[in-house]
Structure formats: structure tokens, C-alpha cells
Length: 550
Image 1: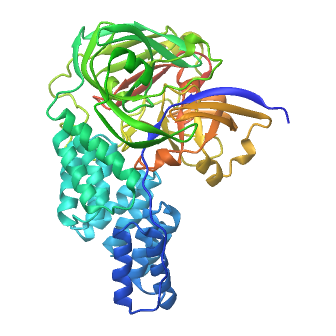
Image 2: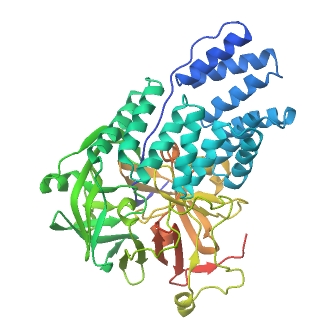
Image 3: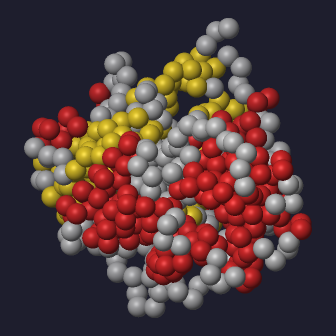
């Protein structure tokens, strides 16, 4: 079969957890078996704990405690459907079980089913207001939907109720980081290392690296913005990726990709060496797309980053290799990536048609909602406002320019990335896609392709070369999609690379089914304002049409 070679760039990087191998189980009293299963969970021996619970259920199918334990350990292993089913079986016999409702809610949350998850978690708390798992789950939703102070208070309570659960410390540390409580984030991660099993050396090294970096930051006020309140910067659009020129520590210009798929900005290790930027902390390896699947975690701190007439001081970055193929032209090679940690300080408008980016740091007016603040009383079930596009005509020419745009709901993953619901043809439910201006093409996960039986949409005879944060991957397949639909904004004749996003999902907090890349985004005027938790798309060409409401 003749193979057509394509090149795509996907630069997401994440962190993973692991578990130990099982040991044998002998016949013993029920009480001892349950205690041993709990001990195995605390030591992250999830396979062995699952085996114990299944043996107990073989003895007695009505053993509620064993079935709840089995549900818990299945969810811990990301076996979400099985974990859901075990919890549902308990509820069929005991509808008032707060633990079963909590497990149901967590399984739904990890799978990205927010609406049903919220209902289950609230029900658990209604039956037992000390159900730590449900409180932590609701707090995670607050975090994902950018009500950060609510998340902080909720996770504090969950830890008060169950201080032995390591996951709560990880969630709280992420919340502290977003609130810029770096000392508390370091202390919370340190507490995680104390209560978590000491079996996963690689993960512990990553956490220790974060602790070292946060202690390095201390009380430093990072991302301090200055210069003009509003500045416009031209960019070059290469393979659907916007390249801009920046200055680092007064030196440059350097070519950076505007990359909403990166939570932290990145500088090439070669450029860092040339500019004398030294590592501030190190810690293990991160999982990422491409090559070996990992890259060393090295943190740095830039004195200043200048973008047009805007200046940002004390900018945390990753220092790593920025991969490219040997035959890649010089103008397509990047010196780094401008991530959300910088962009979140501005209202960012990316005008693909006119090839310009506007950064607006105009102070938010008093009383105006701010992401993570003034949100204590906001109802987590209330969806963001979406423009009514049901009666709109297909978008063409000047009509597209005249449209005021569609405001689209977004959530923030545990790793700090922006995610939105995306619809594919033939599927009756939306999927969660990361918004990634740094990706040349959209992506769908291998797991989603398998789960939704999409193999028949594969494009025969075509494979792609993927350049990711961890290197270069050959032979990626792709789906041919009749359309890609975000809040009614539909692009026909689309394609999506099929990639393994397992590493992304191990730290996203809720399942990400794909990546919304430049092939889709480049048809719009894109506005991202994480200060207000806003994402808005205005079509700029006739490739976009308006779908009926679903």
C-alpha cells in the first residue's frame, strides 16, 4: 500500500502514576481480607486489591462493602465503566448509600460526564455531608470550571475528613498553584509524598521537582505584566501554527509558537544555553506525544519576556528540546512555545485572517466576574451562556465577518489546559477536546476511536509523521470526518489524527477525547480570556457553517 507522508506537531506533555504487581490471596476471614485490601490500596497495589474484593464477592455476591471496595479500586485503575457498574449494583440494593453515589459520580467525572456526575456527587453529600470523596469530586468540578476559591475550601474539608487519601493532596496543590500560593503548594505536595506509597520512584521524582521549583519561587510574584495595556503583534502562519517574535531577557528576536496546548511556556534548551538561562529545578520525566514518549522535566525562570509592547517579568518555563525533522526549513523551526501561563494574563485575540494577535491586559472592572474570584456563590450546574445560532444562515463571505461570534463553554483540566465540548458525526454525545493553537491538525484519541467504533472512518493509505514534545512518531493514522462541530460552528470535510492520549488523561482529571487543532481554529477570529473564563469564535470564511442545535 502506498503511504502518504504528512507532518503534524502535537506538543502536550503530562505526568503519570503507576501501581505494583499483585501477590497471592489465601482463604481468610472476611474482616481480615477487607483490611488487607485497604492496605493494598494504600500501597497502590490496585490489582491485588481488586483480586481480594473479587474473591470476597465470589463467596458472597451481596457483600456491599466488598463491592464498594471493588468499585473504588476499579476507578483508581481508570476502569471507569466497570467501576460505575459495581457502584450502580450497590445502589440497586441500597439507594441511600452515599459511598456508592460518590463512586458513581467520580466514575462519571473521570469520563467527562459532568452533568450526571454533579447530580450523583450532590446526592452523596445530601445523604452524608461527611462523604469526603464526593466533597473532593465537587471541588474538582469547581476547579475545572474555574471557581478556584470554592475548590480550595472544598478540598481542605475533604482532607480534614480523610487525610489518608493521596489524591486530595495532589488536587489541593494544583489549586494552590493556580492561586499562586506557592509555599502552600510545595507543603501540600510534600504531604502527598508522606501519605502516598513510596513505590513509584518516577512520579515521586516529578513531585519533588515541583516542590523544589515552588520553594525556589517562594513569595515571588510571577508573570508581572507591564508595558502597553493593549498591544498587537503580527504573526506568520505556518502549517496552521502562529509564529511570533519575542524578546527574552532583552535578547532576540526569537521565534515562538502561540500554543494554548501548553500550560507552561517552553524555551529550547539550545536557546536557554545561548542566553545563559540556568535550570531552577529538575524532577523526573514527563509523558508526552512522540519519540520515546517522555522528556526530562527541567524548570527555568525568565527575568523578562517581551511580546510586542507588552512585557512580562519572572516567567516560569520548561527548558527542553524543541524537536524538528532534519529536512525542516529554518523558518518552520521554533525557539519555544508561548503557553497559557503567560497568555492567561491577557484577553488574547488571535486573528487568523489578518495574521495578528492582540494582547489586552486592561484591568477588569469592579464587580466584573474574574476567573477564580468572586465565585463562591456561583451555581456549578449553571452552564455558561452560548449565543443562539439555531436560526442563523450558513456563514459566507461578509456574513461571517458581521457575526458577533459564539461564546463557548470551556473547562480547565487538572494540568491547566482549556477544554471544550466537540461533536463528531454519528455520535449522540459531545466529546472533550483540548483547545490547541500549537497543533497543526486536530486529534482524536485511540480510546475514543475504539469505544465509539470509529475505525471505519480511517483514511486508507495515509499515515502521518507527528512531531511532539517527546520526539518524532511515524505512522500515525487519521479519521476522515464529514464535519467537526463546536457549539454549532461546523467545519465540513475534516480529519483528525489518531493518537494515544492516555498520558494526557492520566493527569487531566476528566477524559480528553481529542485536540482541537489549527486546521479548525484557523478559520476563526479566536478570543481566549482565562481571566474571565471566556472562549469565543467568530467565523472568518465560508469553510464554517452553522449547525442546528443538538
